[in-house]
Image (cartoon, rainbow, N blue to C red; front, side, top):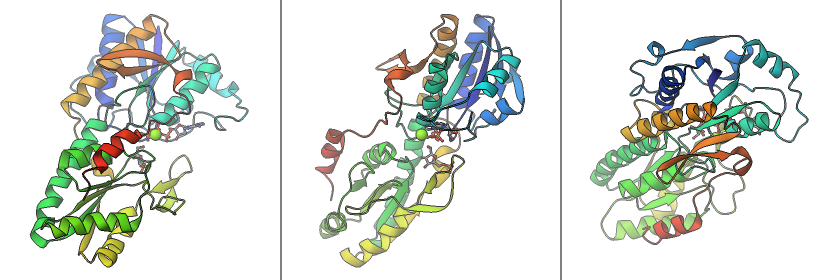
Length: 345
Ligand SMILES: Nc1ncnc2c1ncn2[C@@H]1O[C@H](COP(=O)(O)OP(=O)(O)OP(=O)(O)O)[C@@H](O)[C@H]1O
Ligand SMILES: O=P(O)(O)OC[C@H]1O[C@](O)(CO)[C@@H](O)[C@@H]1O
Ligand SMILES: [Mg+2]
């Protein structure tokens, strides 16, 4: 069996460990041939790939980023719902002599995996993303690392914030889901966590900040990049588009900070954590999750279990059909937000 591996979307700590897991099981145990396409679909389109064997994955487990590179280059022209012409795609797939593809990616990538699978191309998905917004799996690898980095940022902002009696606003990533903000906020004891799924009014946010000030403390507000105040219909974006042509999210902390300062009367500073939360070595949890995912994906290929995501369900990696996850975003459930909100302020 010959398998192609590629990564798509933003990078996520643990991608190297996943590739290593898949190769150690696929090549060393099952005797597959495996190749890795460079920079996602770019390498697939341009015949740019490397052989994946034991030597190629040596020492990869603790390494951040991903040796193959990743990108938001499209696999074919058109989006889900359009009439897609896969002639060129099929020709390429055949020219490499592939029996199947392992696609390492988030919700966008797994939507593509579902489309390919519906068209009869053998695909297995490996769920990565710091956003943790992929339906069908309990956690995606990279999320735990991002949360740890954001929680450390909160700890550090808190000491300088307390020294100056300031309100500190930390913006974290997550796109349209508030998982990083919620978990980092809980870990760091933030007084306010603002999530894309649950808009709040400026008055409410300022009430929380003043109640913290009134009991002699300084507020730590963690805000997800996709958060909107009540009545605002679009998240704050930066200039330029991402590789898929979408507006780049970011900047809400810089919008909120002066508003909080003005309305609550508390000196406020904004910090945007940015790509730091995607960089560096994965946590042990992410390394183990990624390695187990890679191993399960190689086993699934051996067993012909195509068209499915190697998902974490409880403590097991299970194959979940793409049809169950396509076009579904895993948002923070209302009860999780409501439980945290009870202690805001
Ligand atoms: N609905 C879609 N139709 C066709 N192609 C898509 C679709 N969604 C995503 N893609 C392709 O898959 C790529 C990866 O998707 P996306 O950029 O959303 O990242 P992701 O896999 O969700 O990972 P992450 O969110 O961690 O960055 C896109 O850049 C685009 O080329
Ligand atoms: O790498 P880029 O294009 O700046 O993308 C940033 C986006 O990617 C993610 O890190 C992962 O989807 C989001 O949290 C963020 O909005
Ligand atoms: Mg995504």
